[in-house]
Length: 261
Ligand code: MG
View (cartoon, rainbow, N blue to C red):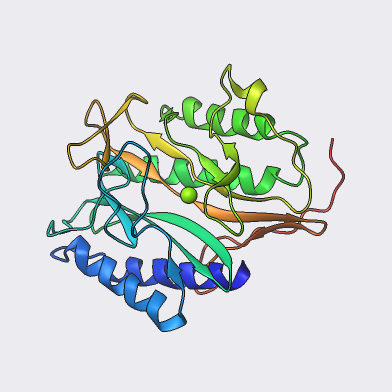
């Protein structure tokens, strides 16, 4: 999974470099496709089908702008100054999967949008920090939700993270909130677990809808949304960010070996 994670990290690094005003989202997608081809990695989004949805997903990345939450289809649309560009991608290499997403702030981003992205990153950081410290996912999900909500944002509930390994979407479901249904779906956190944790935060209300292209999820109120994701592995030594890019200045997370409270 580390090898697949490195390829996903390189793909997202390329996306960060490419996401400039005037660049079409399909050009960014093509660049990611070329990286997967270079390593012989299998893209996991292209051809993905959801039961009940006729059209398989046509690209190796999901690129969602501004009020688009997730699952945006790359196309002719050009990236503009001030956009929030969310890019999600996953691949399989030598039988193992990795999945990650970033929100790229293009050019002059308004401060309220910038703060939304920063809080989304903090919410993911909470999961990274707390994973070795907690027994149950519901504890972490509750902390993530509280941080988002006390910062003034809502957490999308219709889409959640997932276990990941030999296939992309494995048990368990990994919600970013702690709702009433959490008791049914809660799971123990133990070394060996690998999760794709992917909080989606909305500036306005949490409600989303799907556009007529069958894929693109947007906020119902048209307000901006941020999405970040890492594949995280918990080992006896601590948490490992499988999709971390060593070449970015992303804060390295110290290994936490203290016992659980
Ligand atoms: Mg995912």
